[in-house]
Image 1 (tube, rainbow, N blue to C red):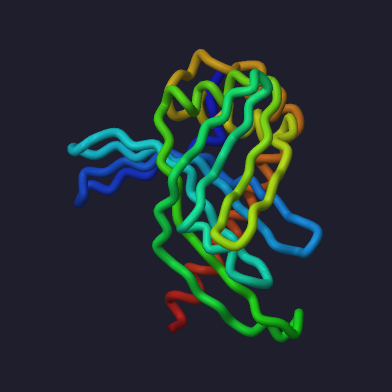
Image 2: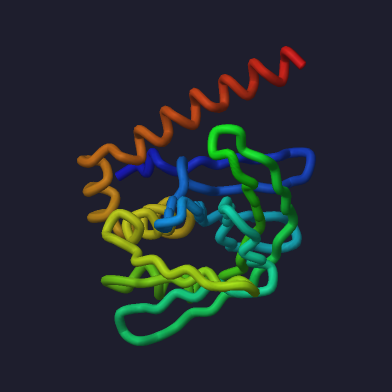
Length: 193
């Protein structure tokens, strides 16, 4: 079965291939802070890398660069990932009448640990920052997201059931359409300026 949710971007100038899914996993806490997570595989002449990109936005600094991301699997195993953060900014939100804080970066993960996450029936994750932490439960849709990525990025014969399930639901297709619309708007606005 073809994995229509995988996006492959090849940069011939850098001889680099990025593989990722359309859309991302979004978690929100009760204060309105959001965490977006997206697996990405990058293949270059120097190596093959797997990371989890993260984008945090909230009402204060989480300071994720000083923490970790921990997956607690249903078998009791914890997988702890170290952060690499490259961008931080803050701005005033007129709609919320408050300061907003953004942190962007990624966590390195090896294929073996990612496969353990995919094979788990359930998982929880914890975003650790220097100021506090935030826990989330990975529901069936989140677990399928990881499995569909593995199917498209590593082994097209694995996790066919997750792929079929999401094909029926069509939720990732909606995200794909939204990304196209956002991409068109970005293209229009970059041409205008």
